[in-house]
Image (cartoon, rainbow, N blue to C red; front, side):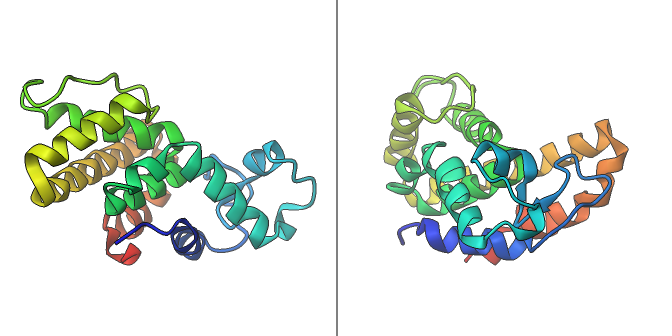
Amino acid sequence: MAADVNKLVDQVIGVEGGYANHPADRGGATMWGITEQVARAHNYTGDMRNLPRKFAAAIYAQRYWFEVGLDRVAAVAPELAAELFDIAVNMGPRWAGTLFQRALNVLNRGASDYPDIEADGRIGTMSIDALNRFIARRKAPGLVVLLRAVSCLRGARYIEIAEKNPSQEAFVYGWIANRVDQDHLK
Protein backbone atom coordinates (compact mmCIF):
# COMPACT_ATOMS: atom_id res chain seq x y z
CA MET A 1 0.00 0.00 0.00
CA ALA A 2 1.52 3.31 -1.05
CA ALA A 3 0.88 6.35 1.12
CA ASP A 4 -1.23 8.86 -0.79
CA VAL A 5 -0.44 12.31 0.58
CA ASN A 6 -3.70 13.76 -0.76
CA LYS A 7 -5.74 11.07 1.03
CA LEU A 8 -3.77 11.65 4.24
CA VAL A 9 -4.35 15.40 3.98
CA ASP A 10 -8.10 14.80 3.55
CA GLN A 11 -8.10 12.55 6.63
CA VAL A 12 -6.22 15.08 8.74
CA ILE A 13 -8.53 17.89 7.67
CA GLY A 14 -11.45 15.63 8.63
CA VAL A 15 -10.01 15.21 12.12
CA GLU A 16 -9.02 18.87 12.46
CA GLY A 17 -12.37 20.22 11.23
CA GLY A 18 -13.18 23.82 10.41
CA TYR A 19 -12.59 27.03 12.32
CA ALA A 20 -11.55 26.84 15.97
CA ASN A 21 -10.17 29.30 18.46
CA HIS A 22 -10.13 27.49 21.82
CA PRO A 23 -8.74 29.72 24.57
CA ALA A 24 -6.38 26.98 25.81
CA ASP A 25 -5.08 26.10 22.33
CA ARG A 26 -1.53 27.38 22.08
CA GLY A 27 -1.94 27.55 18.29
CA GLY A 28 -4.64 30.21 18.56
CA ALA A 29 -7.11 30.62 15.71
CA THR A 30 -7.07 27.74 13.24
CA MET A 31 -8.94 26.77 10.12
CA TRP A 32 -8.74 23.19 8.81
CA GLY A 33 -6.13 22.70 11.54
CA ILE A 34 -3.80 25.33 10.07
CA THR A 35 -2.76 27.93 12.64
CA GLU A 36 -2.82 31.59 11.79
CA GLN A 37 0.97 31.77 12.21
CA VAL A 38 1.49 28.97 9.68
CA ALA A 39 -1.05 30.45 7.26
CA ARG A 40 0.67 33.84 7.42
CA ALA A 41 4.06 32.19 6.86
CA HIS A 42 2.58 30.83 3.63
CA ASN A 43 1.39 34.31 2.57
CA TYR A 44 -2.28 33.97 3.52
CA THR A 45 -3.53 37.45 4.45
CA GLY A 46 -7.28 36.95 4.89
CA ASP A 47 -9.47 36.18 7.88
CA MET A 48 -8.72 32.71 9.22
CA ARG A 49 -12.42 31.78 9.00
CA ASN A 50 -12.09 32.14 5.21
CA LEU A 51 -8.90 30.12 4.68
CA PRO A 52 -9.66 28.02 1.61
CA ARG A 53 -9.52 24.27 2.15
CA LYS A 54 -7.37 23.91 -0.98
CA PHE A 55 -4.85 26.42 0.43
CA ALA A 56 -4.72 24.47 3.70
CA ALA A 57 -4.25 21.19 1.81
CA ALA A 58 -1.30 22.65 -0.09
CA ILE A 59 0.31 23.75 3.19
CA TYR A 60 -0.18 20.29 4.68
CA ALA A 61 1.44 18.55 1.70
CA GLN A 62 4.41 20.93 1.49
CA ARG A 63 5.17 21.70 5.13
CA TYR A 64 4.21 18.45 6.86
CA TRP A 65 4.96 15.84 4.16
CA PHE A 66 7.59 16.88 1.64
CA GLU A 67 9.65 19.23 3.83
CA VAL A 68 9.74 16.59 6.57
CA GLY A 69 10.97 13.94 4.13
CA LEU A 70 7.99 11.66 4.55
CA ASP A 71 7.86 10.90 0.84
CA ARG A 72 11.15 9.05 1.39
CA VAL A 73 9.75 7.17 4.40
CA ALA A 74 6.59 6.32 2.45
CA ALA A 75 8.63 4.70 -0.31
CA VAL A 76 9.53 1.89 2.10
CA ALA A 77 7.03 2.17 4.98
CA PRO A 78 3.77 3.90 4.01
CA GLU A 79 1.91 3.23 7.28
CA LEU A 80 4.82 4.65 9.25
CA ALA A 81 4.87 7.70 6.98
CA ALA A 82 1.14 8.21 7.63
CA GLU A 83 1.72 8.11 11.39
CA LEU A 84 4.65 10.52 11.15
CA PHE A 85 2.60 12.87 8.97
CA ASP A 86 -0.11 13.11 11.61
CA ILE A 87 2.53 13.70 14.29
CA ALA A 88 4.07 16.47 12.18
CA VAL A 89 0.66 18.11 11.82
CA ASN A 90 -0.31 17.81 15.47
CA MET A 91 3.03 18.28 17.26
CA GLY A 92 5.19 19.94 14.64
CA PRO A 93 7.51 18.62 11.95
CA ARG A 94 10.54 18.26 14.24
CA TRP A 95 8.61 16.04 16.65
CA ALA A 96 7.73 13.60 13.87
CA GLY A 97 11.39 13.16 12.99
CA THR A 98 12.56 13.09 16.59
CA LEU A 99 10.13 10.38 17.72
CA PHE A 100 10.97 8.33 14.61
CA GLN A 101 14.71 8.64 15.23
CA ARG A 102 14.40 7.84 18.93
CA ALA A 103 12.42 4.69 18.15
CA LEU A 104 14.96 3.60 15.53
CA ASN A 105 17.79 4.13 18.02
CA VAL A 106 16.30 1.94 20.74
CA LEU A 107 15.43 -0.80 18.25
CA ASN A 108 18.93 -1.19 16.78
CA ARG A 109 20.09 -3.69 19.42
CA GLY A 110 22.82 -1.54 20.90
CA ALA A 111 23.89 -0.23 17.48
CA SER A 112 24.65 -3.75 16.26
CA ASP A 113 22.10 -3.56 13.40
CA TYR A 114 22.95 0.03 12.39
CA PRO A 115 24.54 3.00 14.15
CA ASP A 116 22.55 5.33 16.35
CA ILE A 117 21.42 8.47 14.57
CA GLU A 118 21.13 11.92 16.03
CA ALA A 119 17.55 12.53 17.15
CA ASP A 120 17.50 16.02 15.66
CA GLY A 121 14.08 15.78 14.02
CA ARG A 122 15.45 15.99 10.48
CA ILE A 123 14.69 12.92 8.40
CA GLY A 124 17.64 12.71 6.05
CA THR A 125 19.90 10.12 4.50
CA MET A 126 21.06 8.66 7.83
CA SER A 127 17.49 8.21 9.09
CA ILE A 128 16.39 6.56 5.86
CA ASP A 129 19.46 4.32 5.88
CA ALA A 130 18.68 3.27 9.46
CA LEU A 131 15.07 2.56 8.46
CA ASN A 132 16.17 0.46 5.49
CA ARG A 133 18.61 -1.49 7.63
CA PHE A 134 15.96 -1.99 10.31
CA ILE A 135 13.53 -3.36 7.70
CA ALA A 136 16.20 -5.62 6.20
CA ARG A 137 16.83 -7.08 9.65
CA ARG A 138 13.30 -7.18 11.11
CA LYS A 139 11.09 -7.42 7.98
CA ALA A 140 7.34 -6.64 8.08
CA PRO A 141 6.82 -7.63 11.73
CA GLY A 142 9.52 -5.14 12.67
CA LEU A 143 7.62 -2.32 11.00
CA VAL A 144 4.64 -3.10 13.24
CA VAL A 145 6.91 -2.84 16.28
CA LEU A 146 8.49 0.39 15.01
CA LEU A 147 5.07 1.91 14.42
CA ARG A 148 3.99 0.92 17.94
CA ALA A 149 7.17 2.36 19.42
CA VAL A 150 6.56 5.70 17.66
CA SER A 151 2.94 5.65 18.82
CA CYS A 152 4.02 4.96 22.43
CA LEU A 153 6.44 7.89 22.33
CA ARG A 154 3.68 10.06 20.91
CA GLY A 155 1.26 9.15 23.69
CA ALA A 156 3.92 9.80 26.32
CA ARG A 157 4.61 13.21 24.75
CA TYR A 158 0.93 14.18 25.02
CA ILE A 159 0.93 13.30 28.71
CA GLU A 160 4.17 15.28 29.25
CA ILE A 161 2.61 18.31 27.55
CA ALA A 162 -0.40 18.22 29.87
CA GLU A 163 1.72 17.60 32.96
CA LYS A 164 3.83 20.66 32.18
CA ASN A 165 0.83 22.81 31.27
CA PRO A 166 -2.46 21.72 32.87
CA SER A 167 -4.47 23.92 30.47
CA GLN A 168 -3.60 21.36 27.78
CA GLU A 169 -5.54 18.66 29.65
CA ALA A 170 -8.53 19.95 27.68
CA PHE A 171 -7.05 18.24 24.62
CA VAL A 172 -5.39 15.03 25.91
CA TYR A 173 -8.46 12.81 25.61
CA GLY A 174 -8.99 13.82 21.99
CA TRP A 175 -5.31 13.57 21.15
CA ILE A 176 -5.15 10.01 22.44
CA ALA A 177 -8.53 8.95 21.03
CA ASN A 178 -8.07 10.52 17.61
CA ARG A 179 -4.34 10.46 17.11
CA VAL A 180 -2.54 7.73 19.06
CA ASP A 181 -5.04 5.12 17.91
CA GLN A 182 -4.39 5.32 14.18
CA ASP A 183 -7.23 3.00 13.12
CA HIS A 184 -9.03 6.10 11.79
CA LEU A 185 -6.28 6.54 9.20
CA LYS A 186 -6.90 3.16 7.54
